[in-house]
Image 1: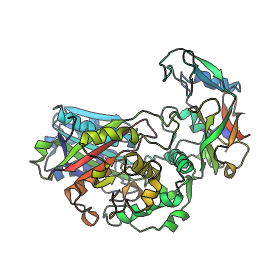
Image 2: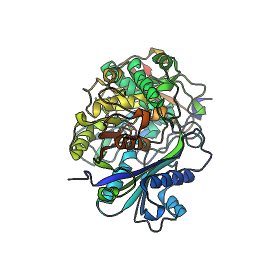
Image 3: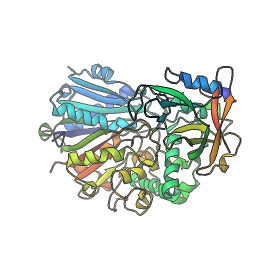
Image 4: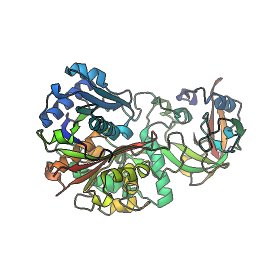
Length: 385
Length: 137
């Protein structure tokens, strides 16, 4: 039975995305949480649990809860980690609801990832992560460098090309043009992509996500209760996190396989669906390569075929598997994973406007596929109709 | 800028013997006393047979380039004068699953090729720190 369809997402809220919010991560969190509660038709008095993740870059639940005046907190989660745990936060909220530990959990992620804390290390020191000592002295510590290393391995083993990576960036920008809250909405061409400057070869500027200030929140409650609230419920059919290999240390040396390959069978089994049932996929796109490798590791194409599959048009809005319909982190903005969940909810509610995938009933939303810390997380969401 | 301004390794209680050996220009990995598996980075247990017994074994310092990047962006000011520079993921010749990272020494980043044979070189940064880098062989 697991967690299938026992909890639901009942509300979603955003702050605007920008390069400089001008406010604290506490204020961002409050704004996103209140917006999500409003969407659900709930108030702060209905909340009994908060959950987030952070890497020393945000405000924890035990500060946000008293700031909001939450009457009594029955459960909270302050998960260490970056994008790989983004969906684990929501999965654990579903678990708290399903076990009766909590009744209404608001999951949030609030970051000033451009104006205060840049993931690339620019303007700050090396993140205090295990095994960085064997890499940082050589000038290897920023996520674009790590993903460049993985991308090169995939290119060497499978012949993946720059043009295939570029097709992902170009396609997602076209999606963002239909998303009013996306930060980057001007179309780009493959020529623009190929002309963009190197960050860390083989990755260019347009392979990289946007560094964004912003917050996003989702309300998780029981499926039964969600049906009585203001917004159409989106059921959490599958919620899985885990993995094993740590690519950070250089162990588990095959960079061409992500931890998504390890969790995908459990995820599909929990939800009772397969890759062929997914109508829309919001795949963690810190870099173009992470989309490409997840197309393989979540079973949408054969291993090694992610490049040709992406370039075929299959992941465009009219393709077999629309991917990152909001523009993703590459073009909408980067709130470290949770805005993928919010977009999946919009698609399943049928409220995605010009970018709506017709008849979307089942969505996959995923976290960073486990390269930087050992493990990943993902959700399969389903419209309740 | 110089090599001395790079970020220092945050040496811990597991890694201290390894860094001390590097200081002596010796490249070591751990070797499981019970099953013989070589491992790096240092850990208190063998992930294959779970033995707690291990020793330090010298490796030849030879390997092949498994993957690499050529970094252009200045993520940290200490590297401002070094870009573009190559960072290598090196598969050591002793085992298929034994890897080390390091930067490229004595060659142009554009000359790196897949599987290129490399040799570890020891660069003394200052009185306390030596780094392992890799040159083509």
